[in-house]
Image (cartoon, rainbow, N blue to C red; front, top):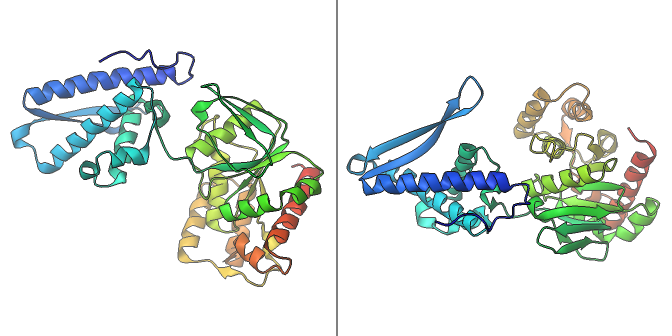
Length: 358
């Protein structure tokens, strides 16, 4: 097996990739030796020790005495190690779903292939991206102007020119440039589309202030979180707003964007709630009663939300009113029409937020 000269030494993930590559090479050699001696081996993680570190546990059994289940676990582990090793060796990325489809009969479900990748990530103490295994990017954006310089030399210009751009993986980005003043994060792709349709009017309505709108089509994926985190770090002082449903899951999505991956590279601690808010719901006759599932999610968030968190006030109001409101309902009940309502709502909310910084 050759070295890893194909991996760029200037890449910030280089040390992590090199460590993962070295560990995988050693593990594969050991697994091969065990197989030649008639044994099957599986590596697992045990509970954390006193230093809060997971302990690696190696299980080796004679092939003749192995159960079918144990052999399957070993085969999945070996197959995943080999695939990831080759991806690092060739400096190629593979998507999580592609990993599963490379051997459907072995994995049987994508849950198993995902779990094995996460096991390797924890085993080597590196993020999944350092294994060159990535998830399909969900995030899209519009507006601008933002210029994305890619490590391989390409450039992506995010402009309000009718083109919706898929967000690149953070590890592909060398640098971000642009002139935007704020970012609007939208929970739903349909609302994102309405904003794009009414872009010119919104842009004029907020005083021609340049901004971009981003959606992850629901809960945020890693690529979207890391892109926003990189944008925040490279352009200090930029404001971030979120437009989500007024229900426990909308608030949960807000919190996921705010705290990111629980690190400084992806969090947006100063994320502001643009809407929907309890004040939008008070006069709306088409409220929907909270379900048992909603209540469970609401209580779960309240347990982990500090008293000074603005989201807590919304959750308490939601609990007291025992109702929820999706932005789609506000839009559908508006006599002004879908695009016009979304445009006017966003102009009003953004104008108020811009002139009343918290």
